[in-house]
Image (cartoon, helix red, strand yellow):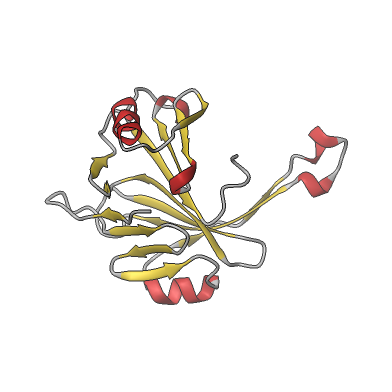
Length: 177
């Protein structure tokens, strides 16, 4: 598996390097999956907003509160520019497990380079030419299980257009397969 390189360009974009099955590097600071939340914060030493919440969906499951979604994440916005947004998500024990990127990044995966102005279907074609299977989970939202990522276009995220709008990588994608 390759390394994902997110390089800063002249537009003051952030640097992220995704290491499949290991974690990622943000601004030259390595964050491994299953790392303690307080350690991640200390390592990154960046301004963030804690966004922990319980999403109550028990009513849709006959009152079964075990179905509620417990979200634990730190939101990093406008870290290196005035136009970047990412979330680091944690499990119930506050261990790092996912990275979500919404905008402000140039992304390079092996020989494939793209950013949030890239047409998603063009990007899918590039991955498929490299032998990477791309499964459409729902219209405009693709799973690349070999790389443990999902990517989605703006329209599937509630906006307009077919440009990349969402990049997600995780230590575990079993909930998506």
